[in-house]
Amino acid sequence: MLLRIVPDNTKIKFMWLRKVSFPLSIVLVIASITAFFTVGLNYGIDFKGGTIIEIKTDGPADVASIRSDLSSLNLGDVQVQEFGGSDDILIRVEEQPGGELAQQAVVGKVRTIFEGQEVDFRRVEVVGPRVSGELAQAGAIAVAASLLAILFYIWFRFEWQFAVGAILTTANDVVITIGLFVLLQLDFSLSSIAAVLTIIGYSLNDTVVVYDRIRENLRKYKKRPLTEVLDMSINETLSRTTMTSLTTLLALFALYIFGGEVIQSFTLAMIFGIVIGTYSSIFLAAPFLILFNLRAEAMSPNDDDGEKDPNAKASA
Image (cartoon, rainbow, N blue to C red):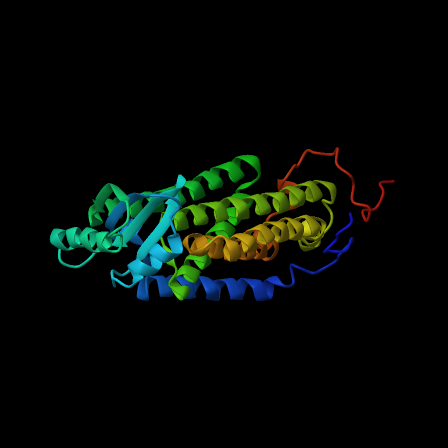
């Protein structure tokens, strides 16, 4: 390999580091939950409700200029983005106090910035709090359902200790990522739900890779202490884990820098999620197996085809 971030044959004592990683994760999770219930998320238009205006301009639209003009109207949270062609623009304005008349007034104010221009207002919709509440509920159900599916999948493929460990590891990533949204007051919208679901998939993939190597080594080295087998397994997958994370982060950083304001919250959440997911798959996933008292004999009690422990004494 031309580029090697992690050298071969590393022997890092990851299981000893659980004395640091467990307390750190507990503090971060408690802080995130506390912030969620005290400060709360900065819900976007998808959840708070508002006005959606679809327009078609005469020629390529200057999104930055439109966004700047709309900001001067003091309408609160306003999102402007292209969809389809460069002359198709979608404008979202958060719900205004004052009921239906206030929402209608928003359309009039938006029209004023396009006076003298050939602009076709194709669609105007008002999304009420009831619809937004249904979206929030659907998003929560999607996250909960994905975690439940993970539980059954890992339980079927491995042992119950692996299933619970994977759920706790993934839940740690989700809760701390939500804490980031609260801390930075990032706009939390449907795309944020997509980011959380993507982080769940990424974290699970990393965790399964580590667990698969652990299961393989537990079958090979049944006589070795569990902590030694876990350290060996993580060190063997460390190069793959770090390289996958770094290449993913390179793409995400490019999106964050050059992707524009519309997707910055999404990409920032993804960047943080990849970092915390990598951390948890290395420093939390395997230590959970110690917490649940996993034993090598439980993996394959009648399996004698694996490689024998080289430290075991030969039978007479």
